[in-house]
Image (cartoon, rainbow, N blue to C red):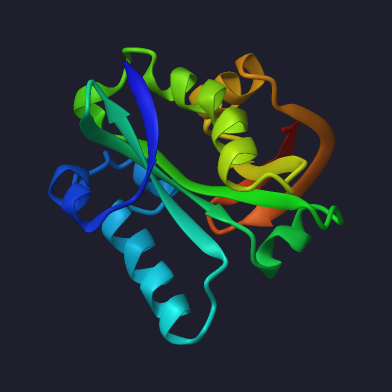
Length: 160
């Protein structure tokens, strides 16, 4: 069973996984994402929230819900959140956990961040598997793109 939990440092040993050369082009590793959040907190920015994906009570994936100013690069919606640094441990990929995670996302956001009305993300156009996942789970693409570090990115959104 897939569940979403607020990240806890006890999850880290399970989340310190490597991504293959293709996947690493498109998302931060968990250690990198955690370091970025910690740096932001040191600087007084508490707008990013780490979330652990659990499978049968075992941490197996990770993402960040970022309420900071970066979201305004993708949307003008004040009550929005940027989904970033999403990954599933390769040992758990191919079992529907990514799809389950995105399907659980709106309920998680409504429960813990009830003012949020929209989730936005940027996904590399070459990351066909991720685009397919997001489309199957209700994200929309309205033809907006931007240049990212690894190429063109589609801006996608989903109402909460």
